Length: 454
Image (cartoon, rainbow, N blue to C red; front, side, top):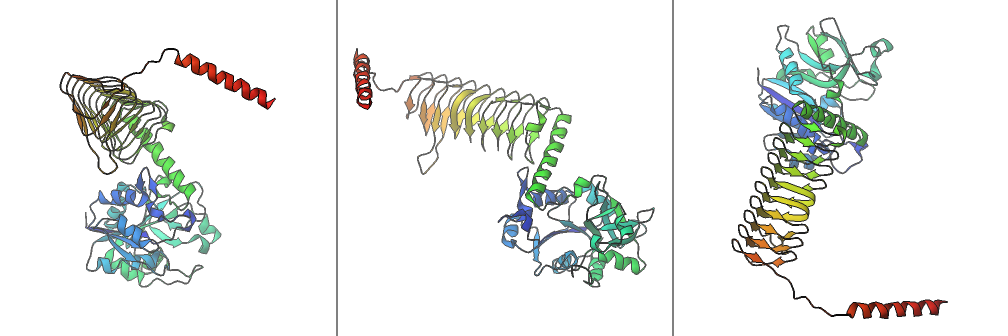
């Protein structure tokens, strides 16, 4: 495989998105659409990555890594003009160039590779275009080919005749060419068209007029090259991605009780025999080990869930949460930056933040770790087999020893030794007959108030 460079066009203003966030930074499955595309490009090992920017340049430069160069297109005079702006960034590069679009995030690495491979075929095409055949070709530009998918002509819809518009093969906009030829051809592109712009596809017609071969590669899945220009199209892309991931994880051996209600992040990882009940949402950074069960209405982000562990229903795991084998987090339990070791349980109505919960420990309902004093965070350590009674407050930094018991309703601010029982409660006051006298007095006041109103 020859060295190749990727040029990604992202200079558009994205006005239809109606957002202060750059269009290509809008997330799909928790990841900016541009980064979906960049990750696919990265699997092929590009020698160079260049993103052409315009409006929102600062946002894009902040979102891209140091190994990706940016170049400015200003003013914006069409796709051909946009690619020309990358000339300086690729000065001296003699390999292949793949041109893509930041708002077309789902192009598969195998499709990119097919374009590059076709560029190296024996007939040495000057350019390779990715075509697709949607059910409704709408106003896409057309790719007219012979029986061997050699291109006869490229034409924009607005400039096409009725006969040319009848062609089902449409132009995705993606194109591959050798670097030197690409920029030489772009120098010859004019703007004598309905929009007065410099069209990238025109290099194909120029090369054909020179007697060169140009070729089309077809994708069988039109959704692969779907562009995203509006909130509605963003939602459709999210739905498409989620549907594919649900099918993927079920094929890998996970059970999804109601697949259409489960939402994954771009990096969610599930092992075999994981069971996911309805209405579960995964944020970024989640791994789930074999045999774990995620119950309904749970939200999980930045967490590692161990073998056979159970979560929910109505649980929330935040970044840094780790559940080891057979640990259990029940309804209305929130865990953040805390580890529940093997067999540890927090069954309901509990907050565990910045904590280490020992194996087989039991956390009673209503328990919280008081981990923040308004300035700094502190950790709570709970030993193996410890029992924390309901409605307890563990005021960090504090250690609860192995096999220790904290009595219900305690506010513990000092360490508890192994095997010790700690009870921290105010002395109970008893006043016999006080409640009866209170009720009698209040009833009389209420009756008097009613008489005054009447």
